[in-house]
Image (cartoon, rainbow over all chains, first blue to last red; front, side, top):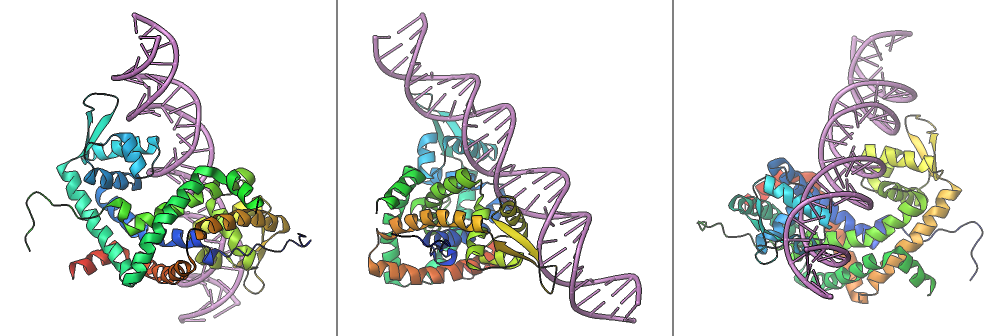
Length: 168
Length: 168
DNA sequence: GCATAATACTTGCACTCTGCAATCATCTGT
DNA sequence: ACAGATGATTGCAGAGTGCAAGTATTATGC
């Protein structure tokens, strides 16, 4: 397999590259939500994600929360700190093992969550309105596989990707 | 329409919320690529996006670049600055109107782009391998509409979203 | 024709976010 | 009881971000 001397381009075009397209939709849709909870409650992105997790799963510890919303332990700890300062969450020492700090949502935290979630649902509804019923089903099922594969890609790191590509 | 006193939750569950699912795939897939071009070339995310744009569109000015990769003028300017420092791009004063700085990719910029794009294509291939031909077609067409709708959502801001939702 | 406004872009500065080392508190195995 | 493991937190440096102000150039009004 011979390469041309004058470095022919890889065909990658940003606007048709799947990862960029996903990123674009995610980023554009996240911006209004972020400015809402930022301006209204002084919440960061990590804070919002943690709030959403503890809204549905009570008395979770930090690592569980981190796993559930793809945050590293540092960000998780800081996010929880922010939520407790805002009065949206409380830390309690774990029952049996006191290293695990059980985090719970407060009443005002739930109120804030509901206001943000309403906006979040409105955004989702706007997106879904542009899709047919069968498209929604296809995307739901496909996204499950994409989530799985992207987790593998992330876990493997770029060296693995190069090896795999080289071995084709 | 009466609300229950003990604040019933909005049904929003992070793990099934479409915007979060898109974000997750995009973020996980972007991380290995970012660490590759970060470690190898000292390139930032903005830098990579701009590089991808000038690889396919020569002598673009800053605003065109910014529009093509969804960056504000500040980030665009800094990204171009980074690329010129790395020797991956050159700024030339515009022909007729010298306020427009025409940015072009250099030979070494193109080499770098090709190496990164190879990895990008490998990532995309890994994702596409998990989808059937018809799923790919569905997602391609659906994403076009989602891109359009997310741009509208972004442009409208959160106040518009609340008004729309309230008027349902 | 010259002051003024508009346009394209850049820079400085303050602020936030992130990544990582070091640390603290607690528990487990021997 | 003590060493080491585990879960979580903190401090700090570096990178990224948003916005006001600035430069350079071109267009406009009188």
